[in-house]
Length: 269
Image (cartoon, rainbow, N blue to C red; front, side, top):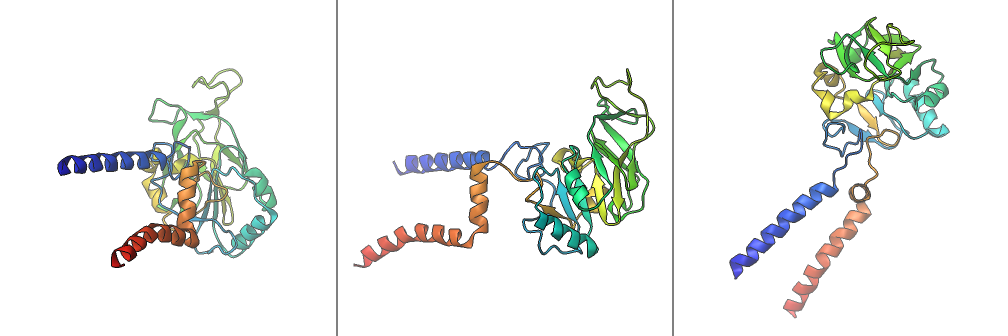
């Protein structure tokens, strides 16, 4: 009978572990809680939730922004840039353009569907670009494999496509109609402000494709408030809130210890 009880307990523990793994992961694109190909769980970087006291010695990455910045937050970013901090904005949808305007930058993200014949894959949206600018971001790197990036207008070019690139507006993977070949800038900079038109460089499936580039970002911080690295999963968010709230941890510990203390007290009586 005792052996059967242990078997039941073991099965329950295994079921709880499987359920726990399921409810604490997500399939949301760019989420650090997504262990799939389109998540960022494999990209090791410290998250920051307060832009007030950023360390200018460490680059700040805003990854696929999807939330607006307040005037106060924009002010913090200006101070960060004025102090020599490097700000990297990776965006392909154009959501970063209002922020770039507020920061006084002439750079803009131009959403599209770039494709190229300069590829070693069947997918025309997965192709190589070449480093054309001098920056520590691409130190020791000659080419970068991109995944359906957006073009960047303005600034000093850092990454360019070959001339065999076009905006595949009809999505047929072939150059046709009014489409035409031309060079496109994928990454550019103004001082220490860098705009990268391909946030997918940081997803799990792409990390191994550009190892030197990822290595150059070891000290980077991620703005966790405006980047899409978070999740809408209420269970994960509750766990994160508990982990980041000392009072909540203390309350849970008290609830867990109280029954044991009561039982021990009864035994002594």
